[in-house]
Length: 241
Image 1 (cartoon, one colour):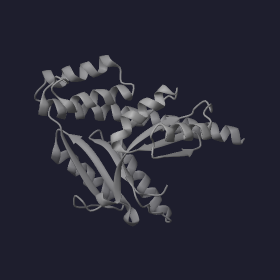
Image 2 (image 1 turned 60 degrees about the vertical axis):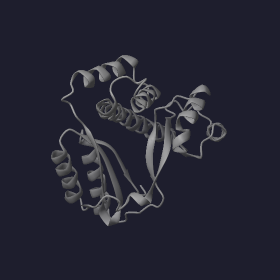
Image 3 (image 1 turned 90 degrees about the vertical axis):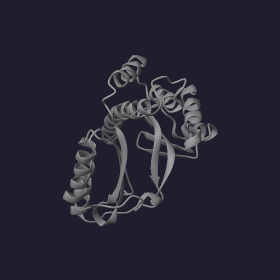
Image 4 (image 1 turned 30 degrees about the vertical axis):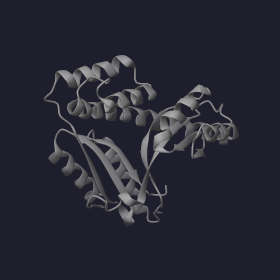
């Protein structure tokens, strides 16, 4: 029974990773739109666009998709996205950061504020919780076939330049200095590991436990609401799940 349970956990983590990957593809496209607006469509003359193309390829986005995205936002100059970060508190003071890319600031602000309010939180001022997070490179690997040796991947990750690695029932999360993300990612791939996602993320320095069933339910519903919002690229929080 334990084997069946472990497979279900790994399957669930794989589904979560696939959903996260799809979200990253959408996020990269919007970031490309912002980069093209600011610096043009030529990656040779636009370092941010060049970095985003590299990030897309690292996350297994086909080159045809990348080129179509660049063409789309080059040919349609009226499609404008801006990046806005919201900070606030969830139930029992959980710190939350919501990163968005939007073509309608009022719509996005209203949706984010409503999600905070509906589920026992409140939208705060910029900077109110940001100091509780540190930017890290985060590489995710899901061992859906149960083939990875935990001791070996820990050794390989650290020797590749990672700062830390956490293992949780078939999911491996590798943390790097932001500047080392590309180097560590390439080294891990060269060692034969299949990476699900590789991106910069905000990692909390402290965590909050939720003891109330109501708080837990509200926090889950809030995160689901953010996840459903196409304007939301990423959500970071310090809930100890």
